[in-house]
Length: 145
Image (cartoon, rainbow, N blue to C red; front, side, top):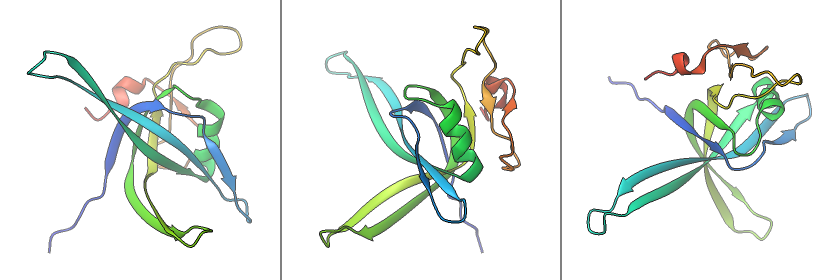
């Protein structure tokens, strides 16, 4: 019997800052929109067209706290995760639906300046998903392509 695969890889820019939600017991999630762009040429008009797709990203616990601390609107990030669709009852009784990317790994691609004005390396999440601390490494060499 063949297995299945639910894996997403995206490189894009944050459409907003990370919004945190905290739960009893100390767990938390962070949510943020990610924009990816596709650029192509319209063959009839020879016009360059940019099409933007928006993705709802969700990170959990320590990873969410790292994202909140280091990311802000406009920053570029590489993420890996899986697609998750869910539904719920709204207060007005209607059924609402959403599709999210549950992030399992990420690499920050925007270089930040430290307090002394020197450029620091992009921060990359550990591959073991331990999420204890960010690793500083060359993000370009960490991409799977």
